[in-house]
Figure 1: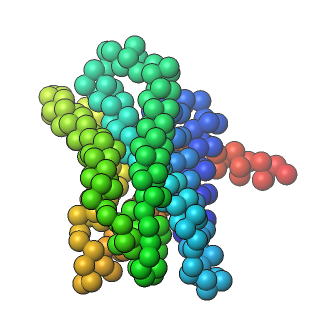
Figure 2 (figure 1 turned 90 degrees about the horizontal axis):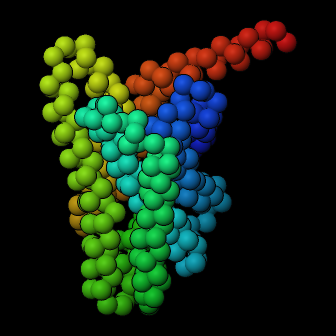
Length: 284
């Protein structure tokens, strides 16, 4: 049920963005549409394989399938970090530089930001997967996790992991920490700009334009940070899996709800689609 809701909800957002002329601004057409597409791919990397294990009772996975899932999951996760940063940059220009927004955030710039997010996400993960694929596994082959991730794989190898760990730390600085710091800095500037607005109505209107994105960033980075900061010791291993479930399954589930409930333009587009659908049903 969760998987069906994730796929249908995110596809609905993409359809709304493409179909409604009011959502053809760069924030929606390039960034929100890309984010919803990304969430669909993100969850489809993990949940179908997990459901197949539940239904068939077969919990084994080949080394090639493991690496494939690890590669695509890591690529989509890294892409989301960069895409959320591009969306934060968009909100910064819209609120802090409103007079320059139209000239700076053009369609060409938006397209390049979205394309760069995908390219960097897949490129960095390709480097990590290449080094992981060269590890040897000669010990136990039971992984205590529900999807193929970086740290559980290192726990099974009998190779020297010092180089891979250093590489993983370096790549995490590039595709997680740096985008997060940039996003954080953008919202510090946005907050300062909003507080300078004299009227409370103006402040509320300005904040409402970025509240959806801020909620998504908080949920995504909050759970992601907890997962990779909690040591995978025996007492905390189950807690680690719970928070992994939050950012791999619940985040893609919540994003369509967050953007549809907290964003006026998306709500209006959804109402219009529902009204048109009801009108077509009654006429037929």
